[in-house]
Length: 312
Ligand SMILES: *[C@@H]1O[C@H](CO)[C@@H](O)[C@H](O)[C@H]1NC(C)=O
Ligand SMILES: *[C@@H]1O[C@H](CO)[C@@H](O)[C@H](O)[C@H]1NC(C)=O
Image: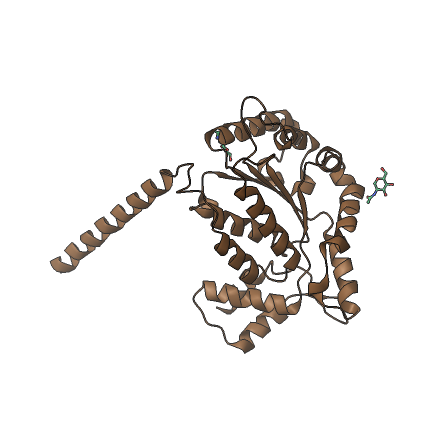
């Protein structure tokens, strides 16, 4: 028994040391090439094999990131606006970028994620939020020029906050003596998602190949949608008309076959090799539309994880 006891203590010690080491390793993250460098091949593979059904996003993101990171000093910060209905992979795509650019991935202290309804919920505090946000962007970019800021739920963002971000996105080489040109800004929203879905559905119903949908097909619809959406009016006038967004990236609605891929990936991440019957069954529990044809998944892959949990 005392042997077991000693082994137990030994194990606990080792675990504690590993924990300490990990902590130290993470918190020692620096702002240099050891910690931040683009894994081109990794990003290319992840976008191609893990982001399902998004051939346009895949191509545009890869080009944009490679382009911006291959220039020692870019002319302006890289700004990308990701559009699409929920469950199409906008968040996931940002994670893939993070994973292949920062050694600590999303855990990196150089990545800052803001969710409008979570971080800026109170209208009456907007002045305070504005000041905080400015100070945070400034402080973090001062600490590390290659910082990444992700703004989720952009369509729910208060105009005042959008105004607060705006100066950082412009072409100037310094605002406040700080150089923002190496920073990366990613905006996520559902704006235009319905237009994208409508277009995709029509395209597929005409019997055309999803992969032959081109960015041009959607770009006009997308800018019109953003333009005409009353909620994103300020966003439109302030960021888009000022040409501060480099890339509008549409995320297409997903089909049954993509949901199947999501289910399989979710199982694999749990270390389970699911059999095809179960995978198909789980994918079939999602809601598809139109009612008759059932072509597109209403929530993309959004609830796949919880459906998988019901089965395992
Ligand atoms: C960086 O941003 C975070 C919010 O993501 C904030 O809490 C922190 O204070 C900022 N750091 C600096 C140095 O401004
Ligand atoms: C936007 O607001 C105008 C009036 O301010 C209204 O007529 C129009 O229907 C609204 N558009 C949308 C898409 O809600």
